[in-house]
Length: 113
Image 1: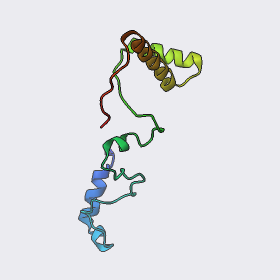
Image 2: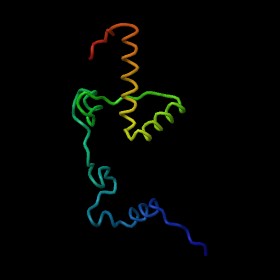
Image 3: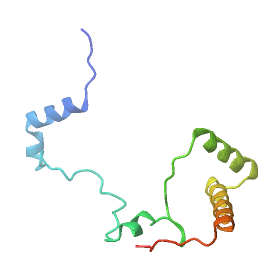
Image 4: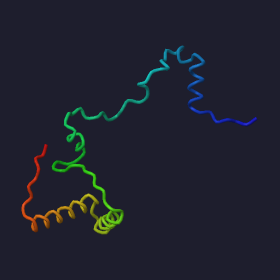
């Protein structure tokens, strides 16, 4: 006789059919079971505040798409200089923006809303 692996679905079905759950007062259709969530979502209406919840003041979390080669180069610079990737990227972006301003003049920034 070949043994079959028992799955959680098998156990759940078995418990429902046995009447055991009802005998101990358990609700087999309960949806809010298990360990409570440890981290609640921020109740702020301002989405930007919740996105930057774990950032330092004056910083914001953004996403950019870069080529694989540029990513490898930035990681190599980060590793060889001992700086975090965040600091390396921030430094390069700052230098690039400064060079742009020197060449094209002062930037007119959009309103922050």
